Image (cartoon, rainbow, N blue to C red; front, side, top):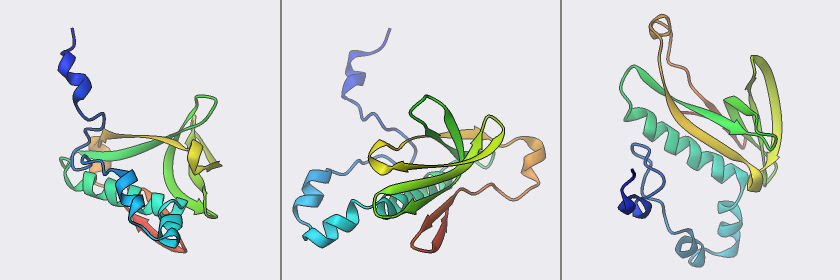
Length: 142
């Protein structure tokens, strides 16, 4: 049986990724132009890349972060890269049921699941897998 006090704990407990900011406070003190940029898909991707990079640095050597993008029909795409597509859309390149795919989503309906996966022994000899993040012509890796 679960502990009733668990409902008061933060719902996000990723190593190094906790400490959810109060976005209402943050936005209340931003000029309109900066607020508009803050709400953009590019800023979302930059923050996600930074969070995943920080998370990766806290993981043991035999684990790595992985991301699934959840589609509206319930399918999950194993993400290889995420990029901005205009101000408010996100484009994902990845793998769906063993096949390469790409899809575009408005960031307001874009959902992801971040998790860790064990690195198999045969993979340990290869360079660590990176997830690509693309913003404004710049590539960020995490």
